[in-house]
Figure 1 (tube, rainbow, N blue to C red):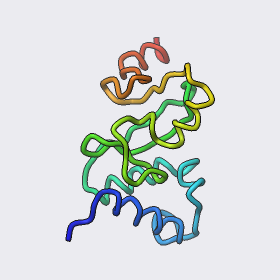
Figure 2 (cartoon, rainbow, N blue to C red):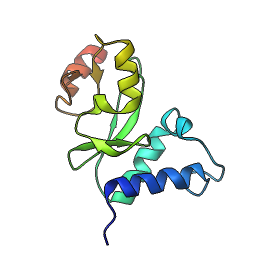
Figure 3 (cartoon, one colour):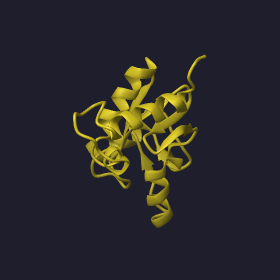
Figure 4 (tube, rainbow, N blue to C red):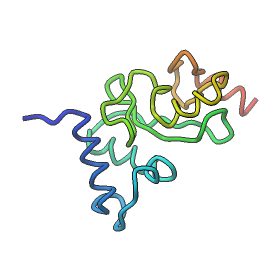
Length: 128
């Protein structure tokens, strides 16, 4: 039986929390998404054998975060079943609830959500 993407994400989260993946010491779910998200996203990409690691830029209007885009959905440690719109990732949803007028900016080449901007716009904003 093939595992679903959600099963793969959940299994990796469990391994990281137990200290059996990424690091020798256990870390919590909060720490995965707040400091270890890039490592987690690349480990997930490796487990799924595909996808694109998406990043929000330092100094953007949303928290800096790395997550995986795989087969049209976005995944991180808090949302194993993924979402078609990255604004729905819990880390962004919590932030957006507090600051509804801020726009989510990522390193993707096209607009990713109704709150997002393209890579071209991002480059122009941050690098002139």
